[in-house]
Image (tube, rainbow, N blue to C red):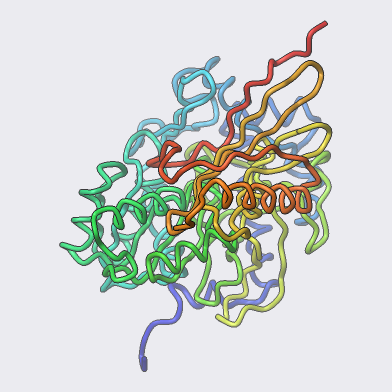
Length: 452
């Protein structure tokens, strides 16, 4: 449409790589000096590693010399320097928000965000949602968890700053979610892929046709899925919507700096807000060439309250600088984030992600969208079983015969795609528990240590 705005900030989004990276280097150097001078956590960390900010004279030297940080390091520092750790800085009198994420112990890692950073986060999240296709006239249904977790709040911030109508329903009460979607005529849904698939099932059980909902766009966050072709197809066909992928990780709020444009060719990486590197899985100080898959390391370039500098997220992906038809010159992760390295399963010496299993299952006609991987140990041998629901649309006369053939097809596909011999169980629709946020796809029953 004539006069329609194409970019949130055309000057930033369409400049040359050289122009962008010149600013990025300046921001890196400023952030490193700030962290070294003002944040005791970083000074101790850098001194132990024999690093000083003066060593960073180029983007390449930033990767080569700056030591990474990990979530466990943040947890340990908060335990030693409660409540926010020694990386908050001098902004503690200006805290606007306190959020957090749970750890394995259930004790949350706390995020304290200054008023200036909270305002900044809103701008970046607005750009991310605009990139995905949200416009001021939209009604955006936020079917996300509103709690300590930052995901839903970051979404709300961006939608409000963009000028669209925010409808923060939260997660859960799925029938009510769907009734309200039709009632207020929501045009955009923001949630996890798993919950959107569950909402599909519930809508159909209510006698509704989800493909005739008021939605036009779905933006999916929180877990891999919307970049998996089978999952994307199920969401697009089921809801009759355009699907877009978005997100990094909550530590990196504004976490929407990976956002997919209208071309649908992977997520653009907003490198002038959060610098994103693809590095070797076994050496975080070795950058990988364009197109090679590795671990993602993230750096806040502008946040001052609890800035993350070379945060090793455990995400895996690859990057390309190939031009995009939308006109944005940011690089892209063409397949989004495949999964987290700490989610990767080691089964009889072979590595596999749950998202790989999901991709294989969805390529076999007759399978539903819900599945679970069960890992056990029989003596010294690992056993892996995939429990997958049958597609509810299947109406075979002899279900036992259908399931037997389906099991054979699934085993063959999984072996071909993962090089692992999985056992397969086909379940009736709605047999597995549904998630209202991130799906739990793995049940690992193996003992932590081998006998003897």
